[in-house]
Image (spheres, helix red, strand yellow):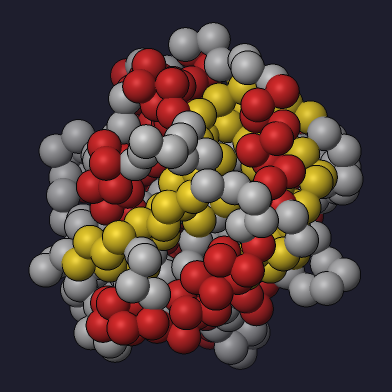
Amino acid sequence: MKTIDLTIVIVSWNTCPLLRSCLRSVYERLGPLAAEVIVVDNASDDGSAEMVEREFPGVHLIANRDNRGFAAANNQALPIARGRYVLLLNPDTVVLDDVLKQTVRYADAHRDVAVVGCRVMRSDTEIQRTCFRFPSVLNTLLDGLGLTALCPGSSIAGRSAYGGWARDTERDVDVVSGMYMLVRREAIDAVGLLDEDFFVYGEETDWCRRFRNAGWRAVFIPAGRILHVDGGRQSTNQVSIRMFVQLQKSLLIYHRKHSGAVRATVVRLLLAASMLTRWAWWTVSAMVGGRPDADGRAARAKAALRFHLGSPGPAQDRSYRTSDDTLGKPCVSCGFSGSDLEHAHSRADEPIGP
């Protein structure tokens, strides 16, 4: 049987035209690689699954009857993946250059690397910030004070996103963004599948932490590119309340799992303080006729504050595991509504803080 170099897994929700473009770019850029493609459709109602069956008969399609979320949907594909490497790829991306060959070649030459990321472009000239440090109490504090957003180029204030790094050099990173995440099969076999407690946000952060704990490296290389269609941008006033709360819930799940109950409690208090400040800030701004999205920002902060002060905790609370009744535009993989998922699900582009 022929060895499969690469299994490309794409999780999609109502992305028919984007998914078509993504798949076309994959097949155009495979080059000499022996590859298979698996699409997991999270109960789309826009004809995405039918389009794949009709136009890409070589794709292995898994059509879910319900929205299983990003982690669970990927976990449907991972056990049947035959490639030496598995690539998690967002459906709202276009593969450029020879990035597939370059990342596989790099992984082949570096046997201690579990995860490889590449350059992600917002446009022909603008590079999107990808790859992040593991969440920590310090990073949460900097984000909560708004310093990360105010000083993104600072190596201190912007440390959570590797501030000052232009993504033009190779470097070891903590977290490779899930929109293009090449993972070694034997590393997956060593640490297991994605943790489905993370419905959206945080699953690849947790995965990278588990790889690190098992002695593997995660590396960004500036070889090859993908285009994140429209830069993954959606206006900040369309960030859904549920998505905003889910991001913070995922942070708490991560800290409880990897940092312990005490640090998770500290993070929760920091987030609650940040949300209280934010709620007051944007409520006043709305009253005095400030930014047009002030009401929406205040509502998100209020909902997050209520979550931090009133929910039973991340392990028990499942109230934000559904995409029903959300506001704003949806996540292309799980249908959760939200804004820029440039970390492919690991952090929001909007800062936690005023």
